[in-house]
Length: 114
Image (cartoon, rainbow, N blue to C red; front, side, top):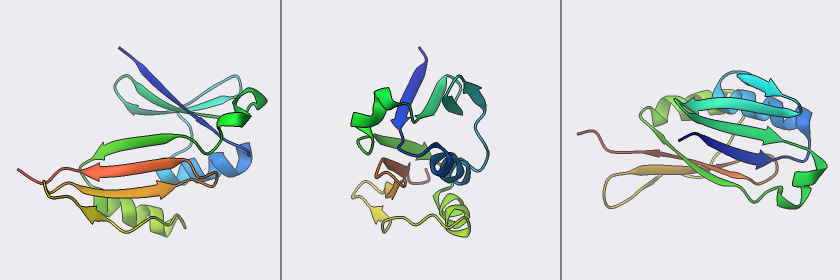
């Protein structure tokens, strides 16, 4: 199974810059007006600013499981991206929410070391 998670955006230029910092690279593919970042073997995040998506801008919620949360947060900070405080859940998972310029939520979650 493949996954394509679409993030509606209001401003392509601003969003592509922001997501380039968030993922640490420009889009891996551009198909028409959609810009795609591959985030797993068969998983993609798609930034789309077409009018057909306008009503959904700001409503996306995605959580990424990561193994290097502190490194990612340092890279984001160096690129000017701010985030909520990091929470640690009772099961040891560390979680942080990052909002894109449109208010779409991209959370990062790191499971405790085994």
